[in-house]
Amino acid sequence: MTISAVRTHRVSAPLHTPFVTALRRTTTVDTLVVELVDSDGRSGFGEAPQVWQVTGASVAGAQACVRELLGPQLIGSDPDDLVTRCAEVQRAVVGNEAAKAAVDVALHDLAARRLGVPLVRLLGGTSLRVPTDVTLAAGDAVDLAAAARQRQGDGFGVLKLKVGTDAAGDLDRVRAVRAAVGPSIRIRLDANQGWTPREAVRVIRGIEDAGLDVELVEQPVVRWDLDGLAWVSDRVSVPILADEAVFGVRDLVEVIRRRAADLVNVKLAKCGGLHPARTLLELATAHGLGTVVGSMMESQVGIGAAASLVAAYGTTAVADLDAAWWLAWSPVQGGIRYDGASVVLPDAPGLGISGLTEAKVQHRG
Ligand SMILES: [Mg+2]
Image 1: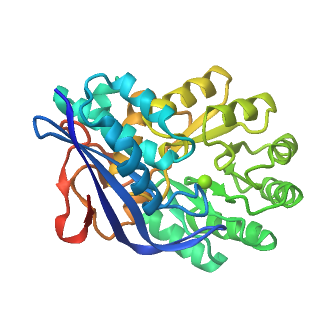
Image 2 (image 1 turned 135 degrees about the horizontal axis):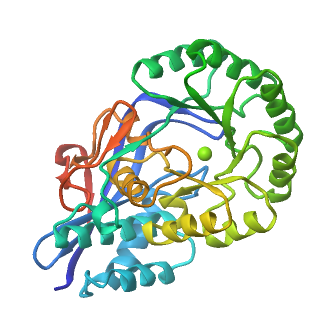
């Protein structure tokens, strides 16, 4: 039994609501869906989301990486030898984590499909429901409060506020959202590298002094400033979550060594897939760091894989897997769906994806 074809599909799917952070504003998810086909005609899917401002990954770059390097290497190989295949993918190229993640996830999906079990079962879990937070796009205090009430009405119990665009107004934004939703909703913040270390301490202490009950603050300062991140972590009580500062295992080792953060946000498109993501979760747990599994703005393909990881391994804080909730339509048939504040995994082999939403997807090789 061998892998007989590697296909790539370029997807640009519109959002129902614009997504705004300290780094960017977007109205579409642009992503490369990778499809591995075995000699029985079964397909496994994975995706490489384009996020110039966070990972530097592009659809064109991921497509080149898969078509010219990772794909040809897989043709004729045994898909059941999953650990070897995944290790080969990681070794094949420097960087290109999103492309590696797409192929790694497609290998896992195909392996699970060949066994006839959901991906979560292949990973060692049984749960098919994964609670998630939902993001409130960056905006002014009035808009955020209105969006917060809407999401509370949609059934979400954990809100993630995008801040960091304007430190002077961020305390008022958090105050407005807390006033809008009351005490029972959990609020977490993501500054997406938007504050200086001093601004971060000032804003977070303001939040603490005002008793606004914030669960955690994600990536307060620029990603390369681990000393700054540690300086902030030392000076506030609210737990600090490292996101852009940690792509792979070596980054996490540095965060642990410098005690720079309290938790780490593990994302497939940053670390290169399910294989390295499991190492990150184990390493964080072994050193007493909290864990969150999150995602880029990506589709039901990547969210299905990340949710399967959470369902099998567990994390210390609620997952950050609302990305596909923002999509006006799904680029794939089957796969995950959202039910209130949960990602629901299909009780079907692999990721439960039966194919692409043909009319809306641009095919390439
Ligand atoms: Mg983040």
